[in-house]
Image 1 (cartoon, rainbow, N blue to C red):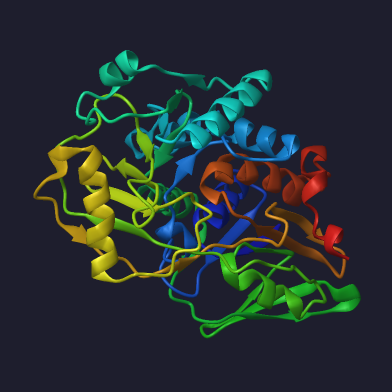
Image 2: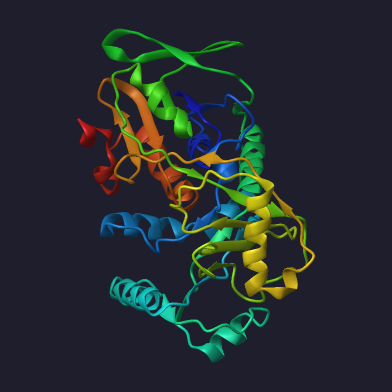
Length: 369
């Protein structure tokens, strides 16, 4: 079986990797630019099910979170996943009450988040300045991913298995035959004959599949995650922290640190529509982080360009074969980093084994018809 995967971000790479494990499948992974240079390269890469609703979507994310340790071990890069948990802090009575209610709901769903008091908070992260927090919660199963390292590892494994990886391939198109089936994918370097095509091209996915009569309504979802120069270890125990607003001009933010020492930080929640990619904004984000972690004094902020996240209109993934093109498989979603290990496994089952996975029933493109 010859499968072409369009899009070498974390989702497309995971699908290609899981397909390539099957000796009966010949895989070609292609990307218009460098692997991981799209939404994956701009992601905060927080693995979680904390604010994922409805319940079936929460459960899907939770199942995938549990696969991340195995996924990076199988790839030979265990250090690319940091699973030390996440702290969420609030400093107003209203937001503190909202956080307590969310933790209670999560606990009822069997998700191990719990409230922590000031003494435990200080023990978890001694470098955190002592501010008047109204509520704090700790989710020990959450973590974050060095996405670039994971994608590099996948590409190495693909090549070891004889798969073809084509980066900087430029725009692609395809030729369809009887019944709308795609016969080949056309690139600047020539045609690639195929039995199935996976489109996991992030924000380019809707325009690519529209030519087959598939409509995916989307939200415009910009975001910015700045970086810093490498620093000594800031967090002692947790992997990432969500910090509260300092005042109306300085909203809440999120912060993590990669193994090489670089810190990544963004404004608000991951759903914040942030387009300010100026150095001034980067310096302001770093200043907010330093307010809570004085050890960051002397750190240099590195501004990053705005990135756009693949966000279907209803916020849920789009997964599965397209009715109008029966060998065209769609894979578009926000939370791609959290979902990549599980989506890779389930998509490979549907594509290579020809079965329908019931877990994915809520995420078919047919819901938009």
